[in-house]
Length: 218
Length: 164
Image (cartoon, rainbow over all chains, first blue to last red; front, side, top):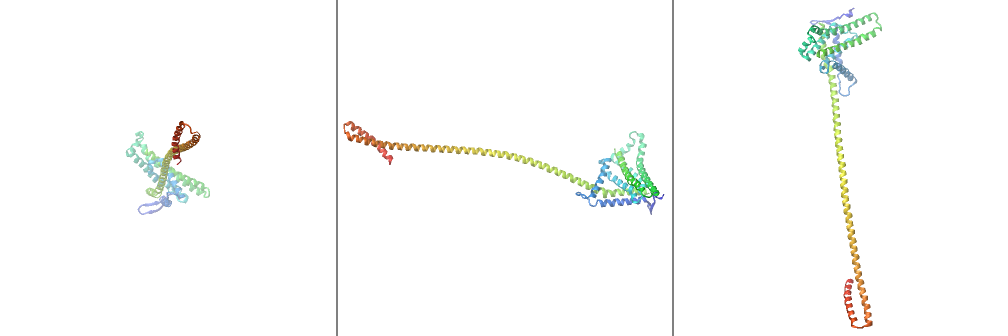
């Protein structure tokens, strides 16, 4: 089935092949940025419009949520988490618009996981210093040090695989269903896999990232 | 290779969204929060001021009440003094009027008495003269007559003076 492959859309002379997922990511980026610019064009302190109120409610919900997880003193990481949440939310549901979700590509989820790993470890080092960060591998007993070191890789790996597996499986199931029963039946299934599972996985990804950051900053 | 592109994409998206979406919205919300806090603070200040002014007014009112009481009291006292003075004066005046009336009455009576005396003396002289003219006897009677004349003459002189 050619739907499962990530095709190379075009090839640049030096940079090599650009895959579908990267192109879709660009589209998502463009949409998000253009939407943000349009929505934040006429922000007012007094008498905000309905759109502004909805936007503020959404942003403040996300901020409160992440601040609740990682603590008010670490609110500097909140914009990154909101960005990832928005990106994943759009990426996981973009199949509704006929694009292949970029999170179905292992490269994308791996990239997200690697960034999460860096953010998690960076937050720990920044908060408690390199010494404490190195020492925490030997807690509570030095014997567990290899396991703790593995954890650094395992945590983002689990994030990456969970997201990738969910999106790929949903995509495959939906394509198979569309192949066998092209009429009506895919609608509820699409709602489940594209909307519910997509948003749930976005939520889980950022929530776990924030949780691991809190753990690391203890 | 695509993994690196995705990472770059994500970083760029992060920077863009932070600049275009999160920062403006957060700033607006901060501003509103500040404004609301300022409003609350202003309201609190106004309330404090109002309470202070109320207290001041109450104090002033209290002072005014006491002041008015004092004024009424002093007015009453001065009115009483004035009343006493007037009544006393009136009493004095009445006393002096009565006194002078009494004096007048007394003077009048004396005058009347003197007139009466002089008339009685005249009558006595007339009656005596008639008696003398009828009898003309003895020296004793002549002495008596002289004496009487002398007395009545003196009194009649006085009486005539008063009449003038």
